[in-house]
Image 1: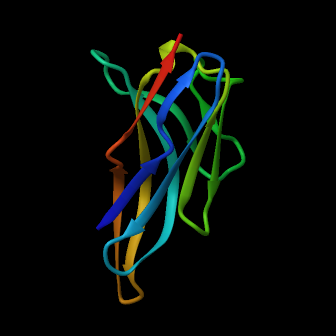
Image 2: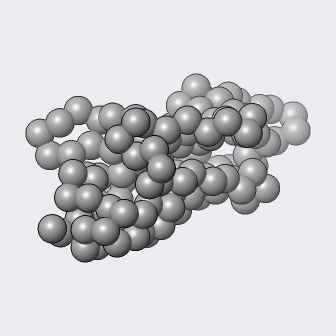
Length: 128
């Protein structure tokens, strides 16, 4: 099994910054590779929406609403992904979820691949 744990959420003022972190870990064995890690968010009353993803190809993808304000980065050795959020706006208020796709986990004798896993989410609140 794979667990994703987010941290770094909280309250920020409009125009401020926050940095989210997410760590992927295996409950048994180890993680051999993760194809893509990213961030999604869900505001109250809305559906979950794409924020940013990093597939390790040097071309991270961003939602138009966060382009130029948010930066995604990734540490493949630590199986971690980060989201540096700047110039925050009240409309950025949401629960932010970490996502990992194409996770190969297990031991050298038995490897399972999970298509997608999600974290529990971390709340970001931006006050005007």
